[in-house]
Each structure stands twice: as C-alpha cells, then as structure tokens.
Amino acid sequence: MATKKSSTTTVRTGSKSAGKPTEDSTARARSAATAAKTPSAADLDLRDRLKAGPRRPAGPPLVGDVMTRSAMEALRNEVVPEPTEPRNRKGRK
Amino acid sequence: MALTLLQNLALGDTASSQTTSTICEPTAAANEHQLFMTGNWFASSSADGGAHWSFVNPFTRFPASAGGFCCDQVVLYNPRHRIWIWLLQYSTAANGENLFRLAISREATFGSWYYWDFTPRGVNASWTGNWFDYPDMAFTDANLFVTFNMFKGDNWQRAIVFRFPLATLAAGTSLGYRQWSTTGNGSIRLCRGPGATMYMGSHNSASQVRVLKWADANTSLSWNDVNVRSWLAGAYFAPGPGGVNWLGRLDSRITGAWVGAGIIGLMWSANRDGSHPLPYIRVARIRTSNITLIDEPDIWSRTSAWAYPAAAANAQGVAGFTAFYGGGTRHPGHVVGVKSATGWDTTLTSTSTHSPPDQSWGDYLSCTPHNASSSQWVASGYTLQGGTARRNIEPRYVRFRA
Image (cartoon, rainbow over all chains, first blue to last red; front, side, top):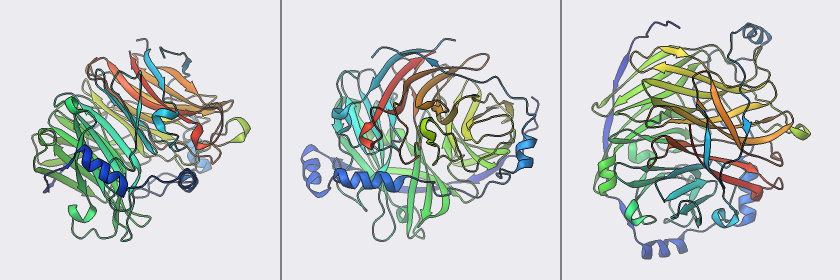
C-alpha cells in the first residue's frame, strides 16, 4: 500500500535532575515495612470493586469515534484479513 | 513459523499472597535464571527459573510515600547493564498528588533495590494537584523511557515522556533526565525492540495515528502522522457464558507497540463494526525508514473477542504479542502469538473457568524479549480459576518462541 509521508514536526525536550537514589538496605526495608501497611483482604475487596467500571478518558476526544449506523455501514465492505483463532495448546509446566 | 510455549507457569497463592485483582495488570520479565512478575497488588520473584516464586509485597517493600502504594506496576530487565527496573505507582495524598517510584536492582544483588521518586511538581512546579497514571516503560540501547498520563482529579491534563540514561540508573549516581509533555495526545505507548531510537504511538483520531520518534543521540523529539483504516470504539461489548460482558472497562488506547526489522507495529482494541462482529485487535505496521503504512494485519474472530494486546520484537525483529480472547461460548482466555508470513500464529495458554463478576478485566499486559535467548519472548497473562472472586485470579508467566 503506497502512502505519502506526512510532514515531520520536531520539538525540544527539557532536562531535569532527580539527584542521587535512595538506598534501600535490608535494615531500611525492615523499618519501612513498619511504616507502610498492607491493606486488609476486605480493603482489597473494596479496591477491586471500586476499580471496576469504565476508565476515565485519557486524552483528547477521538475524532470519528462515534458508533453510528452510517459508520458501521461504511466499515461493512472493508477488505479485512482472515480471522485468527488461537490453538488450544499447552507447553511445559 | 510455528509458535512453541517453553514455559507456561501459573502463579499460585504463595507467589501472590492472594493479593490479586480482577483488573490484574500483570507484567513480567526475566534473565537466564531470575524472573520477576508484578500485578495488582503483588510482586513475585524467582531465582531458579520459575521453579519457586517468592511473594514481594509492593505495599511494604519500600517506605510509605504520598498516599501509599497504589496499583500500576511495570518490570523490565535490561541485559546490557544487567539491572532490574521496577516502576511502582503510588496513590494520591490529601493534596491530590501522587508519585512514581523507579527502583533498580542489580542482577548480582537481585532483590536489593535503590530508587528515585518523581512527583508532578518535581517535574514542573506548576503542576499542582496533578497525579501520574497508566505507566509504560521500555528501553533503547542507551536510555530507559517511561510514559504516563497525568490527571487533575478525574480530568486528563497531558501525557508525559521521560528519558533516563541506563548507565546512570545502573551506576546509582546522580540522575539527570529529559522529559517532554503534550496536551495533544494521550496514553503514549512505547515500542519494545532493539535499537538506538525510541518510537512511540498514540491516536490522533479513529483513522490516524501519531508516530513519535526520539533518538538516543538527540535531545529533540519528532513525529509524523499516519492514516490508517477507520475503526470504532465506544462501549465495548462481548458477552460470554451467562451473558457477562468482560470488556466493560475496555477502551481504544494503544496497548501494544513493537519495533524491529525496520517495522513499527501498533496494536489496540477496536470495537465491533460492519466487518467484525466482535471487538478485535487493530494492527498497523509502519516503515521506520519513512514512517509510512505497510499493512494492517488485524486480529479478529467471528466467535470471540480479542482485546488488551501487548507486543515486543525479539532480537531478530520478529513481533510477538500477548492478549486476551473470550466472549461467546468462552470465558476470558490468555493467548500469546507471533507474526507469521501470512498472519498470526496464536496459542491459548489458559482459559478462565468463570467470567469476572464486575464485568471488568484488563487493563494491560506485557510482552518483552527474553534476553538470554534472543529469539524468545516473555509475556504476562491471567485467568480466573475456580470462582469469580479476586482471589481466584491466577497470574501467568509465559516464555515462548517462534
């Protein structure tokens, strides 16, 4: 499929410093473990339920992303590749 | 090109400590003997090639920061510098801001970590009340790249790309880095594969992708736009047994991206349309030489939906991927696959015995080249086994070759 290359846009990036890392020795991890807490099983159950549902939009709205009858019809006659069905095969456990 | 599963390992309760979620978001990486896997809300390591796994608690492994450990994680192994890279996303504190932690462990001292924290205001002083979400991570020859979306409350603000020199991450010295952000594109996905240039992808519209390019040698970043065949998103629906729609959370962001052998590959979940009766995986392959479209070998089925692809090129540039397959008569199953000359060779690694009760699944998987065996890939997956509770989620580590 021959397609024309679009024009290239170039932008500058910025620089920052994050400094030196924090060393996490075993002793430090042990003390940290007392400061940080693991949620209870009930808390995780709640997190699991709260996380369910549609995701928040993560970018500008997509132009053309409307499921209308005309859009569906327009895509009806697309030339598409053959379908892919996975094989049911197990490897070494 | 036949696909062979070399390892297909389920992580049991000991490995995950039953801290699993139906939105598991697993990632996995490996070197020759050391394996590491992350997911909601666990991490697990193996020092004997996967024979035994040890639970690593992401809530307590590091000091509490911001609102405490939240959720999204990504792990990678960099063979050039022999380091493990573990990214953890933290919850927002009372000021609405969170941080992400970039932790490094050297292969020789696997399990001993040092880390840097990154806050929104640490990157830009004006980004008050912002928080990072939805990380991606990949590397080139010289740099580690990390992308995030940024939100203020529930409102998307921008996408951001970080570039960290791998040599400094490995040395554990003072870390200078570069970053770039945009309000024009969201959910920027990083291409995984060998090379000295990072390619990235994001949607401009439902018929055009933006391919971003950042070479190791350059401090500037560039992009080109590529038209692709139109597709649809909207509310995804693929009812399985019992009528459960396991795609209630799915959206159209690019989740799979690879580069190799002169080809950039982008993959995302598209909704059903006049040519596809169920949601399916859109694939666009693009030449690196001039950023033009090669072809669009989509992955679809007449009987079940495909969703949540992740991808990587191996050292030979061949594309491998991991995804989910379900709906119709099937509960969600996990699949790995490779690009063949005529299409895709795919294999189910495991099929769920149930569908998720809250109609949610995802949000991402991982696929990465296996460094010790250059023709192989390592992929993460998961299924529900024996029930519908979040404890019935069974994470999966898969190593495969073409």
